[in-house]
Image (cartoon, rainbow, N blue to C red):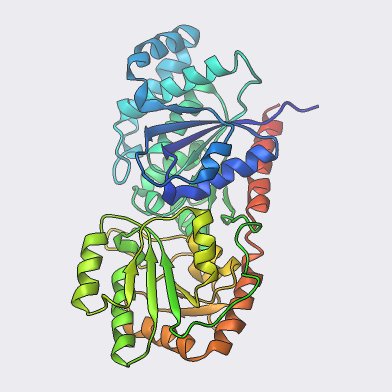
Length: 415
């Protein structure tokens, strides 16, 4: 009988509302019997926390809380495996190409965090089965720490690349991580193509779309048409989400005399600027910024929407979305989509099949898509039904099952 799979997860912060896909992945893996320990670089101080965080069985270690323990961790590691320790230290200090861009850690900071992590692995497995794998979420600092922990421990290492973390690190840094990883996971074909173009066969890339809990996100039992159609949008209030384009599109719609409402859910550094833009466009009675919500709170919001709109863009510094989970959530609730041709969105939304797509940064084109759906309730129903069918392929359990298979494959290959 093969030994059980036990994975050390490296993340930037925990728990993060905007990264609920990591939380859902951990929960799904635990339900399959995968043992997990979470190693977060830093704590998150957010007012809104997903209630399912309480369901996670994995212990959480905050690496930046253990600076005092760091010296003892280094001493124990160098005593236990002096050659491996020194070789990893030399590697970290000499591979400057692993740093830069969106990676904020210095070589010595990343090495220190990796040492604390590996010593914690050693402590934990004194009382349980040994760890079999290290997996990092995000290609910047977490993947670098995972790589160094892999070298310090000898455990197989993989990472998931998403968006900003992928496009805002140097190609040499991505190449260095790819050469050490048993597999690179990413969430859309657009990302996979980019990674392959950079690493040129230096690593194995697996496409695994993020899934959602289809038991939670589902169409309403009964839908009612509103006298004023409701447009809903959800996302962090940051540049790449393109909420300013959505507001400009709403202004164009309002200028035609159409009656509608728009509710935007989320928080972020752009909120004040976006509210000022809304007011400047005379949309104060039409557009409402409603703050953050948990996934469970979002379900009835999706279900009462007539249209879900999300209009991302690629920013000047190359930040962009992959496949935004909120699109899958809204589609699973049977809501027609208006979105943009960015990242992996066209892999989810097919124009005039389960939603409508416009060019990014084009408020006129976005407004035209919204106008069509506002004026044609029968098309909203057609596209919404097709959206729910499409979202059914993005099952979170199935996605986690594939990931667990990758972890088990590395365990069998090393046994």
